Amino acid sequence: MNAATNIILVLWGISEIYLVLKMRSGSADTKGKDKKSLARLWLVIGFSIFFGIYVSKVSFYPLYQSQIIQIIGLAFLFFGVILRLIVINSLGRYFTVDVTIKKDHQLKTDGAYQYVRHPSYSFSLLSFLGLAIILNNYVSAIIIFVPVFLMFLYRIKIEEQALTDQFGNDYTDYMKKTKRLIPFIY
Image 1 (cartoon, rainbow, N blue to C red):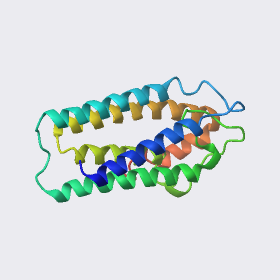
Image 2 (image 1 turned 120 degrees about the horizontal axis):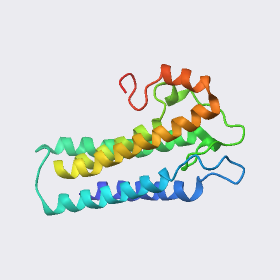
Image 3 (image 1 turned 120 degrees about the vertical axis):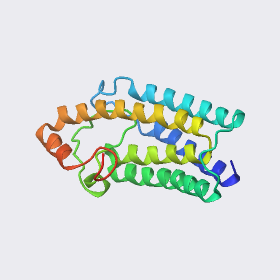
Image 4 (image 1 turned 30 degrees about the vertical axis):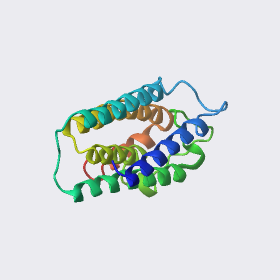
């Protein structure tokens, strides 16, 4: 990994730590919706990143030969982090790292949310895909991306149940109009 990659990884880590420390649900919010998915997600992410990087250092199973692919991976990582923060900012006070319903919670269906129901997760996964590409090791790519992707799917299920419970038909109608993570595809 080069200096640019290391800088982006540090900024990514700092942004995620900030979100965990500052963007939790408050005392007035509906609790118990998260089902410990945040803790499980962090555990999976930690192990996936650690073992993915470790495997990339001790083995050589290249994904590509071209430096251009590594630059694309770096761009995915960078833009995933930046776009995730923009989406989080667009949610404003309704964003929390734990699945919860805020008092006077409003369903957001504009901006990125008109294309996918979980753009924050989409952009986070883009960052993980970028990291997987940067490491240039297909075993590392699987270790980093697959468990994190599966954990996000688990968390999405929990989040969508909480939103359906809160918004009923408004949310189920919204689900019919938008894709989960990838616009027009999935």
